Amino acid sequence: MTSESNPMGGFCRLYSVLLYAYPPEFRRQYGRSMEQLLRDRCRDLARRPGGLTLLRFAGQVMADWLRTTVRERAAAIWSAGRKPAKRSSVTEWAGTFLIYLFATTTLVQAYVIPTGSMEGNLLIGDHILVDRMVFADPGPWGRHILPYRQVERGDIVAFLYPEDLRQTYVKRIIGLPGDRIRLHNGQVVRNGRRLVEPYVQHIAIQPDPYRDDFPLAPEALTTPRGRDMLQHHVRNGEVIVPAGMLFALGDNRDNSADSRYWGFVPREYVVGKPLLVYWSYDAPTAELQELTLDHVIDVAEHFLTRTRWKRSFLVPRSQPAEEVGGAR
Amino acid sequence: MTKHRLPRELLPLTPPVFHILLALAEEERHGYGIMQDVSRQTDGALQLGPGTLYGCLKRMLAAQLVEESDERPDPALDDERRRYYRMTALGKRIVRAEAQRLAGAVTVAMARLAGESA
Figure (cartoon, rainbow over the protein chains, first blue to last red):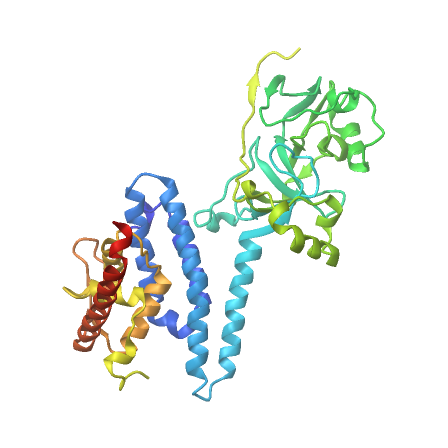
């Protein structure tokens, strides 16, 4: 087999799993041929330049999969209706449903941005899809199959808020384990080098010594975890990120509740990486967090005018900051 | 299911079925061969996904428009065995009838729209 030479190998193997959404009869008949067709096509596309072609092809295949699984299931039920074996079709639908559920909960998760802490890149009311696979270590076996990489500095990451696991936060990763972090006049100094962060937005007029010169000045706003960080992980006026932890800051640096206030993000709380904005709707924070009837009516009334169309399918990008030597 | 249908009742053909039959008009092909040829026929406008392609082939086999040939490797690709399909006599009649139907529609369209575009 030549799947080694195929950069879409992971996608092809994922497709083999997705084939289980088809009726068993159909899969037995054509599953192998369909896998082979996909492999052939991927190999041909890979010979041409342009990653976008591959991406578009993957999108077409997924759309085709959604359409035809439903069609073949319906066809299977239609023909089963004439035979006595009717119960099996219910279990078959359950199988398809489970695969859909697997696809939507394991691979991606929908999520709304409720605060302006990443403003400049993500706005309040941006509905995003989070790629749950990319940072989830699938084990030594899965690493070859699934797209997986380590969290890096500059990544925008969705994670469970350590102080309340029911909430998901989106921030930018500034420090990895071992990094020494401090802020000087609102600018991050990492391992003694000042960061130039083009994605950061400063809005405050009033200086705030804790916020801008973290972790020097005493601060009352920290949570218990934040205080623990200040007590145990500060040396020579710098926070040192311990093993298994991450240090995350919001891009809207002057108005962001982030690691400065509530401490480190445990690595295992990372959910994934924002993939794209699928819908951006201009609504107040409170309405986005709970689905109320008022909100539904509001959306129905203002869908066209308050949807920020330009933001549709925007991809939030990870961006490493430039390091400038010699911070004073 | 469709064994006793007259060709006329199968018309009009859906675009994927029509183009798959055209792909098999000259020679037998395997699935990927059909997909590539349909893309060529339509200048890339019709890209058959695997589900669409094999769903259509399943129905076309049931309607006896195509039949399975044999399994053999494609010398141009690699040594994996692929299932080949070929058009039946009924398939040939049907695709011809569909082409005539479309030609008739095109003639009418040309006649009525001739004045507009000029």
